[in-house]
Length: 259
Image 1 (cartoon, rainbow, N blue to C red):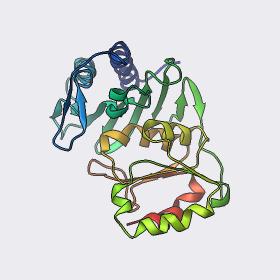
Image 2: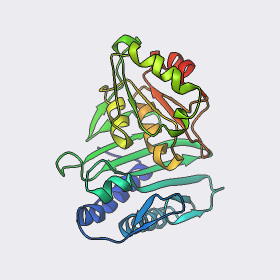
Image 3: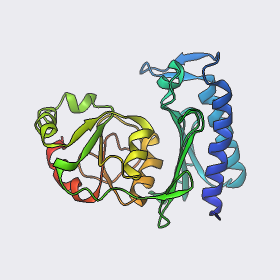
């Protein structure tokens, strides 16, 4: 399959980072803690440096916003958004629900996303990618969101919900749950991959960073889903919440969960 130069670079960068991560997984590595008590390892830093080096070499005029190595040229026409290990807590504790997240923004609009889970699926890994107007793919195969049209047949997966839990919307979530077919909490990359491939029908998170969700936003959109924050606004650099659903459920869920 032929890819655009941007997508090929993102895939190559994700694979290079994945090699670094696989070699370190369940091994010995230094762990530090940020001001918000979230962990960061030497593996996060090494993986991001690898990604940044490759992307900068191929596209020296592009900007870069990384979880570990910071920001440069944020006003560039093209801006890469990178979280080298989204799910560092899982990585540190030795379970494989973590991923490499690489997205590309063009003039403020997300246009490309690569989500690679190098140690998932028994170590075989899982790779999702999408580019604007070209559909979403999972392990090389086209995928699409489900056609679920009613809450009674819908599966909702939840992620980080601290802010939602402290808001009036928490009670409305409680009222919503009995109306659903089922509720799950897959979290991180996994429930977005499931949404894009028709396995769940909605994802809600109230505490996210744009680097966590930028690539996944493109993947879900290209699979036919609708993605906004919990105010109904488009996803952008300042986004801190996420509501991603199949088309027929978004409006109803937003009314229940907006805060």
